Image (cartoon, rainbow, N blue to C red; front, side):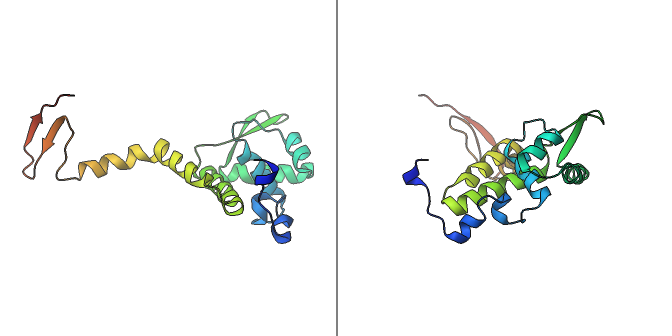
Length: 162
């Protein structure tokens, strides 16, 4: 995005620009940690890195990580002395927070990031689960060239040429 393409923000919008999720959850330690985790879910996070990137205290980072661990958003690897945390990308919470991050961008910049993310999620996670049921419930269907069904569930082969 070039400087000319940048949206003009009101002073109210600008005030929340640097807060996690546009200020929706305030500027709390846990909101800052979640924003970092969701921004790069493939990274292994050490508490010291999160302290440095968020500017929050060691104790508050550990408390936030402990809560996120209990909530199932992250998992802990390594040992007690040198813990490493990783986002559980299979978590529904991760998907929801990712969609929310895209929604905040879309509302502010009038983009369509969330639509793309929802479509990708549907195609990779949900399509296989729901579409076969929809197809199986159709009375009449045709695969051309292929097999045709009629109301009496009698099937016939249809030949076709290119």
